[in-house]
Image (cartoon, rainbow, N blue to C red; front, side):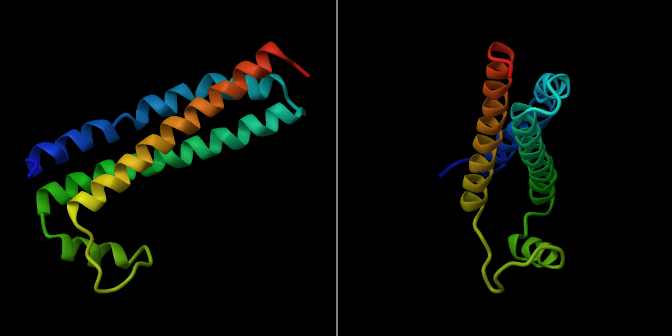
Length: 128
């Protein structure tokens, strides 16, 4: 059985890396604006927005895990979230399920940022 408080803190620390992901998207954005009106530029902008969507989700999850850590009542938390986001009623997720979702989100943010950089490097090496 994992230490819940420690695991929550570890999750919050990793989720707070959204700042670094957001910062790492800025150089490819400059490359996109430098190669305006090209297919690579459009692809870079799409990947930039996808990466920033994941950054926003990491930021949101960081704050929500902090709230969960302070409150601790999963059913009340889900009830509050249901006011804003549609979700299945009478289904409270466990902390382990939430941690798994946060881990998936973290990996998606990482892969989106890596894809953005790969396209940026290809754009620099093979300009159109």
